[in-house]
Image 1 (cartoon, rainbow, N blue to C red):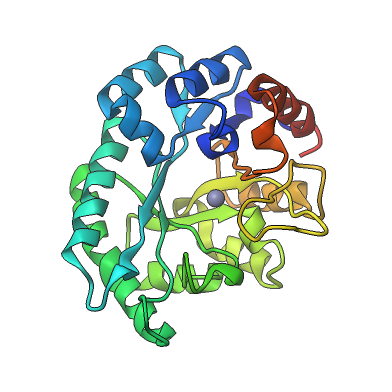
Image 2 (cartoon, protein in one colour; image 1 turned 180 degrees about the vertical axis):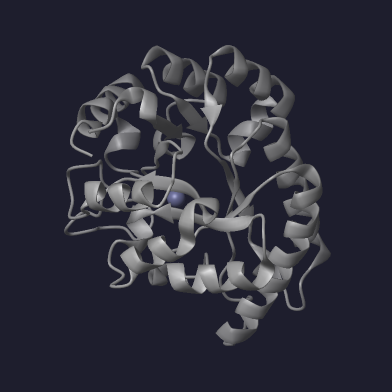
Length: 272
Ligand code: ZN
């Protein structure tokens, strides 16, 4: 059972209804403990202003979404490095618990997934060097394998943690139930991650059927994911962060009144 204070709103959940200022006010109004902005919303408001408003509202920042996207070209492109530096600076400004990395899929025109993964690791290495100097933590978000080509070629907790093992302190994982619930190894890999590397926990639900690969995520309770089981597993392993609600839902939740969405989240959290 979760209370509103244990929740963070990932702004993607109300992307079509609220700008960041409205989302901050909405979180305060509904008693949420934190917020996790996306960079487009942060850009609109400005990181300094956002930091002040978030602080004044008494919210913590469970993460900044998102950095990564290293595979725009081969070899690793300086533009990707620079963009991630900017994301790290912004994460520091707003006091984000971590910068969430969606690492990028296949290099355009390429069929070399191993090569894409090498570029990703090089990019993460470079970003981590800079993030350490800023006191920002880097969280790799493994994405469901259906996104391997176009969003992220890191697709399992094991794969993400193997990278973390090689890169050392300051890098960990964002566990999003939508991406990892199906993985027969998910629980043992959560155990393997441990408290230092469990940096974020994202919740929503997997609908049956799912009608859109990206924009048809479900509200908690409407699908097949055993959220309490996964949540207790990260908590047993020392995760003390907020439960970040991240629902991309073009045909349902994005069409509803945002306050109704927030109330529904709080209601459903009771059974999470
Ligand atoms: Zn996520």
